[in-house]
Amino acid sequence: KVKIVGFIDKDFAPVGKWWYQRMTNLSYTTHTLVLIDQKVVDHFTEINNSSSSEYYRFEVRLVDEGNRRKQKIRNLWYHRIKYCLEQLEAGESILLTDVDNIFQRYVPLSEFYNSPYDTIYALEQKFPTLVKEQMGFVVCGGMTFLKSTPGTIAVVKQWLWHCTKTHEPDMKKARCDDQVQLNLLLVKSMTWNNENASRPENLNYDDLIQYGFDGYHINPNISFHAKVWDRDFAWRGDFDTHITCPSRENNWVSMPTTLPKWTRDQLTEINPRINHNVGMEKMSRVAVWELFCGGKEGTHHLKHVYNNETNPVRTLQQAINLYKQRYGKL
Image (cartoon, rainbow, N blue to C red; front, top):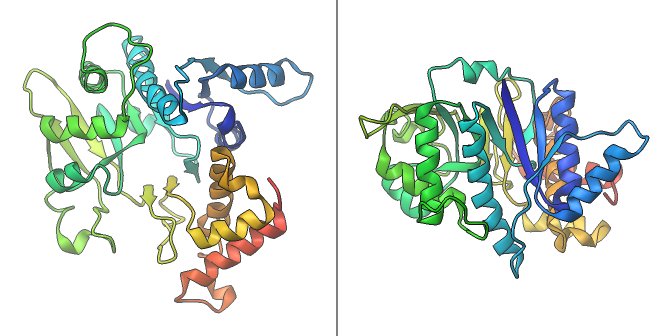
C-alpha cells in the first residue's frame, strides 16, 4: 500500500478539492489531504459532517503561521519532510505530490513499489541553479515516490537534518526550502548514471535533461538506489508560449509553472482575485493547462482544428478563450 499525500491550507482548498476528485476519478484509493491550518480543518470537517455526498479523507498537521506567508510555507516544508519520515518509519510508503500537480491517467503505484528503487524523483528545471551547474540537473521537491526502506529512511533523515541543521527531535518552528535542501543533499551524497541523458542531443529546448536515469548513495553503509523519471512522464516546465506539451500517451503528471503574464492579464479581466489569491491562481493555472495540454480536447493537441500547426501562442489563446467561456469566475 502506498499513501498519496498533498498538503493544503485554506487558500489552497479549491485546488485541493479539485486534486482529490481528480485522483478519485482516476481510480486511486489512498489519496489523502494533509491540512495545515485551523481554517482549512474547520472547512473540511464541516463538509464531511454535512449530509452531502461530498467527502474528503484528511489528516491534520498544523504548522506555525509566522508573520508572513513565506514563513508559513517554509515551516510547512519542514513539517512535510518530518511527516514523510514518520510515515516511512511506520512502514508506510508515500507518493508526495503538490495538489496543483495535474494527473492525467491511472498508473498503478505497485509499478513503483515493486521496482528496485527506494525513491523515485521528478526532474525540476534549474533551481537551485548552483546544484544544476554542479549535478547537471535538479529534482522537484513536490513530486516524489518514497518507498519505506532503510535506505529511504536514512536519506530522508539526512534531508530533515539539512532542513534544520540539528538532530533535535522536534522543532515546530523550523523553516527551510525543502527543494533546495534536497538537492544540496543529493549533489554531495549520490553518484548518478546520467551520462547518456546529459548528452547535448538528448536535452530539450532549454538545455534540460529529458530522459530518466538511476543512481546510488556514495556511502557504502547506506543501501539506497534512486531513479529519476523521464520528464515526459512526470513533466515539469515553463507554462510559456513556445512550449511543447507532454505526450498524451506517456504523460502521467504535469507540473506547469506560473501562467504567462499575457494570459494572466486576460484572466484577471474576468476574475481579479487571480492576482491576489494564490489558491485562485493555482486553480486557474490547472484549468488553463487542462484546456491547453490536457486530454483529448487540449487546444495544443487539436491545433490542426485551428489551422495552427506551428504557432503554440494561438492554441494557448484558444485555451484562454475556452476558459472564459466555460468557467468565467471560478
